[in-house]
Length: 437
Image: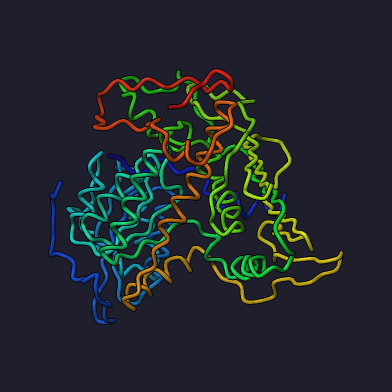
């Protein structure tokens, strides 16, 4: 289908600031045998699918992760982001010699993802808009590629089920599958959640996670649409503003906070969710909410509360608060997490700092070299569904169970997209009126 288009404000920019306020061009088949380790002498070839801001960052991190590695293929729905990404990589002196993308290995169009996968690469980086992630992941696994898969993994229930099928197939093929839920690769957060799981604050009773920030990129007015631009191109170029492509801000960005809730809860699914939400600021043709507040209910009357807002000139925060039977714990944005018991400091992380984005790729490529591939698949799919479940509750105004979200037949992404097809924009959801199947 398609790859990412225009550069949006990256998740990294928000996380940092908020803490303060098709076989064409095929080449030789890949050497990697998924049943054994790749020796240091074997060069790993990388293919990038989606050349926007996140894809560019993933490619840069991948090229720093291993000494014998090269990016040899790139693909995007549009030529401009591909050209910009390639130029940026070529201008990085420390990795420029690893950028070996020839003109005939630059693919543009709706089928570019398949051409990258078929180009003889060993590892694919999937960083297109999340509506296409299930299809791209399925194709990469079918071709036997190791994978870095950006978050979220889908925008609807059918997409999550497809991802779970791909996860199973990846395990059977012994393929590495690392998810872009970056906090899971932060050393301080790893130790923090391990202590929570070990009972540092007793039985967990409640979690409150915040994702309050400004708009990522507002939807331009319909009058700014160039003459002759198709429905599909218009929506792809502004993909964040359409639920079928981005999943809504709750699913596309706040999913990081949702993933930390899942982490705290041992990745066990909740029973159900209720939510409020809506659109406070005009969004022209877009159809996503700009605020939600979701309450998840877990067994034993445990609750998780997740607040998300993306409105300008409002209070900004990206924190996690955990309340237990014997204490309290907090992750204040990018600062060191801490745990208190009986009002006294019990623990504060003072260990080594790391670049979690880089660690994702370091551990991915090491697992390939060692023949012990990482597979984040089940938890990455479940965290995505946890966010979709919350969005469903906000859009409909109804109580949504985990089973209803997982088994939903609400398919947002159409099959067989073409540039000239008619693609009407779904209206903004209205709680109490909007239904899901």
